[in-house]
Length: 288
Image 1: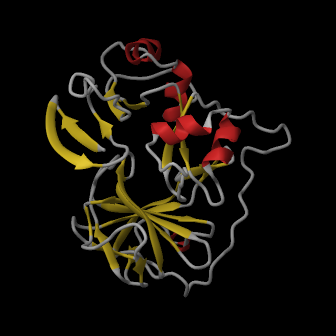
Image 2: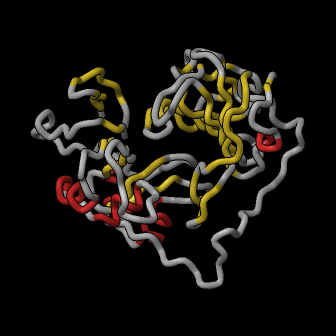
């Protein structure tokens, strides 16, 4: 699938990507092909969520879920993710299959496969972002605590090296959702555009994609089952592709500000273990 990146009402570039945000509705361009892109929409003066929902023929609930909003209050200039269909976004976790995801949200496996243009087998990887057509959030268990931590395996400091050099500009912040609970297992490191990004440990590259809000991002599955994610890259390193084996310290990309980003930095996540960068405060200088 070729996605069109637009901005300020102009087509800027065409890239190959299974899912990408565009800033305009592309129906007039793809008259004979259904466009499954997500739209990044800037709220206009006086607009309400109900008006925006009507404009894009989706439910208010879909907008609230996609943007993690707890109320319908929005302001001029706010940027919203607009899904192309009623439903929700799901970030794939370890051990999940399309069938499990469909069951969790009361959706149809076939629709998830077709809508996200997956293989006939519905193969997905940890870190994949899927649109779940007609998906509904499961009701939280009354015995669950909203602040309940997810069990993590703390790795020895020697397992990971730093993914890049620079200064920590944001400590623990929201990165993804597991069983309905927000995970604060991400850290940001800022440096100049083009600063090399390396694999923190050896492993196999799973995802090499361009998807909002991560922009250009990569995930690596390590031998112990832990997955690391590297977001907002300016570009990927040469010969980086899904399935490639990489060594610790190997350059996989270059720092940038793609996706939902306010400046050149690396968004670094760890899934299935503690993020070793989280013990350092904002302003700490990180070196290899």
